[in-house]
Amino acid sequence: MSRLRDMHDLKWSSSGDFVLDEVELDLKDTRDENYRGAIQRVQARLQSSKGDWQGSPQTGAGLKKYAGLPNTPEVGRDLQNAISNELMRGSLLSPQEVRVDVFPISRTSIATLVHIAPLGQRETITLINSYDLADNKVSPRN
Image (cartoon, rainbow, N blue to C red; front, side, top):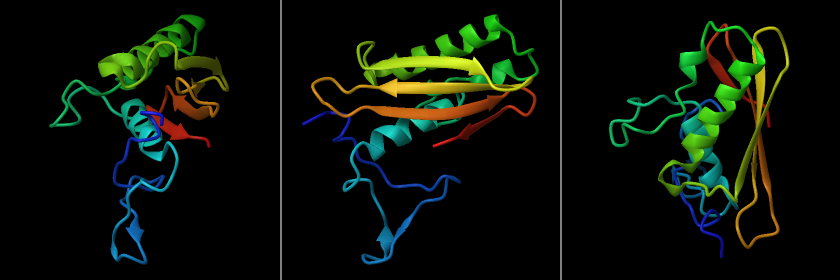
């Protein structure tokens, strides 16, 4: 069994709200959804900056430091490195499991593709986000 598949968490919606299990009438968790817990951890790191989480003050890719910068190849490489480093910090993902690609999609937005290939598994996960340098907003696209 994959350690990434075994990551469980409370399930939250794309808007960040906890999801209610309508059968159990309690907060829903990610136990029955392959890789959902791992995906949520990756998304939380992409959307956070260090200091955002009291229980884990070092968590967060810190993309807000790119707000207001021009959409240049250098900024794209820096963003790519910041995301890669954050996802490998604390062994969330190993270097063999993750690849991050970035490319401009508008004058102020950069697409980020996080490719995850869990070790020993056939499944792969691709998370697509956009980061708007003008609005300092990370938006999931899948």
